[in-house]
Length: 241
Image (tube, rainbow, N blue to C red; front, top):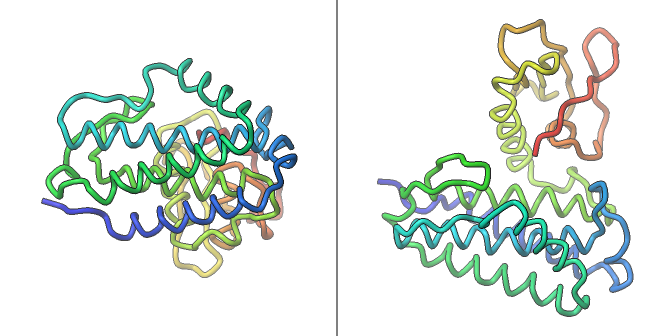
């Protein structure tokens, strides 16, 4: 029986603090400015992160009680809540983020040890143990802190989180054949990842530091240089999420 994933809980807490600090550093007028995500303002990103916290509370409630509690009742509900949240008065939006973060932190801290093994289902229909919920929050807060478009990039995301994000993308792309496979190589020689179906075609090899590889794999602004072996262009990847 596994207990709480302590490392992931720490990353989630640090990422939450980083996201809240980034939001706190944006003026009220600045929340209406564009984020890095097409069609979304910074307020949309904040509303999304707040609603994601409550969606993950639903999964932890499911794990704790055994009563199926989906993240969202529908894709429309999710989209509508983000849009409505983005239009709140800015003081209400800021308060909603802090309140949602507090609810999630409380549920994570209070989940019984046995419940971490309970199987729940993500919004995409993937069955996972509740022990994956902290990673789901790690991913949200660190990536969306960059998406706020406040000048913070993947170079300030912990290296272990960056490596985990590339792991996540590689798993998501493992069976895809709609693009030429790409092999990512960390410049320190410690890690490689294959994006795409193994054996479907010769991969394009792309090297860089781990934060830059994570930014590239997730479709975010790349903080450092990337190099395609052979001197060709670095391929464009399909969307991750």
